Image 1: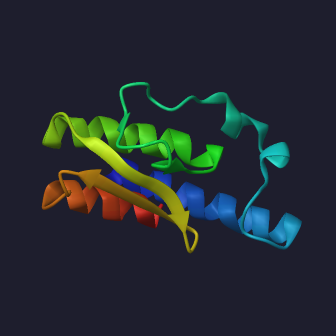
Image 2: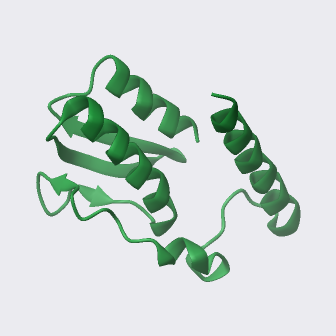
Image 3: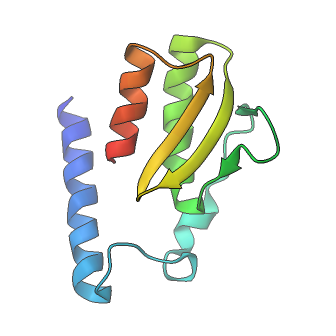
Length: 110
């Protein structure tokens, strides 16, 4: 729990530095090339071709989330992975409930 709090604090610090340097909260891919170096986990099963519409920077977080969800849900499919209002939208089949839904909510906060 403490490690997660430290990681989130580090992300907030990074966001604040980006805001100070660029006058905005996000970096584009050409300003953040290391975001493009991580591939999406190949075991993520999509419900359709339009299920994934996330910028590359989300991939490391989604890979972590996926591993956690597999431990809880077992074999699930991803109905939608996208960015909405600056946060993560991650919809699963079956619908994530309980602990799985809590993990998705926590990832949305990151």
